[in-house]
Amino acid sequence: MKTSVKLGGLVAAALIATSGASFAAPANPYVVDSAKQNVLSGYGLCVRTGSWTPALAEQAGWQGNGCKCDKDILSAQACAQPAPPPPPAPKVAKVTLAADTLFAFDSAALKDSGKSMLDELVNRMAGMEVEVILATGYADRLGKPAYNQKLSEKRAMAVKNYLVEKGVDGERIQTEGRGTADAIVNCQKGGVIKTMLNLIDCLAPNRRAVIEVIGTRTVK
Image (cartoon, rainbow, N blue to C red):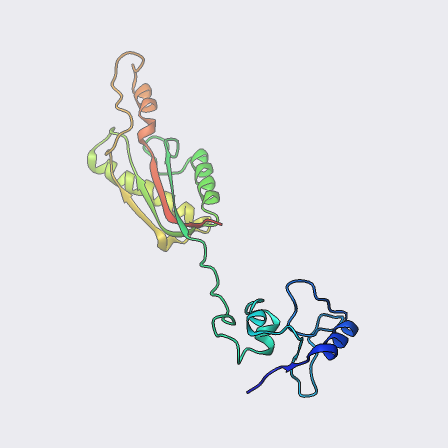
């Protein structure tokens, strides 16, 4: 069994004095040189001071000289490397963008303002581990229901295609068209709404897409 060499009395004191070590508390159980390196015997074993005890050797923990010199006779618990701390817990981040200026009337082409909103969304996604993106398109009530349903689906696809152009993984984007469902405004002719153009302008908030980004962002 490997062990360190223990020096007592005057011999240990002489070695410590010439090595530049001190008796500052807590006492060093091993003789070190001026470079703070362990002094070794002719057999390659650490030289102990007269104050050496197993408890003192264990005091510095798994990175101390005790576990470097006398690990085979110290307690396994004292020389066991602690487990690394767990990684930061992930936090679910959900981003929702409801844009009422994405599309013009009777169109699935993104407006410049709509593209700017999607650019902002992509920037907000930076650093997220994205699980899924839900793009849902809507239409206003003008026109036949079947036509509006198709239009809402095209609007959702327009959002997906633009996000893919910006580098978003298309496999994580799901699209859905909901026609005229969930209307934000319900405009009726009368008052300030006197013409069809007035009505189209009033219904603009319903011509939209809602984009939900679901994923995790690590909290540091």
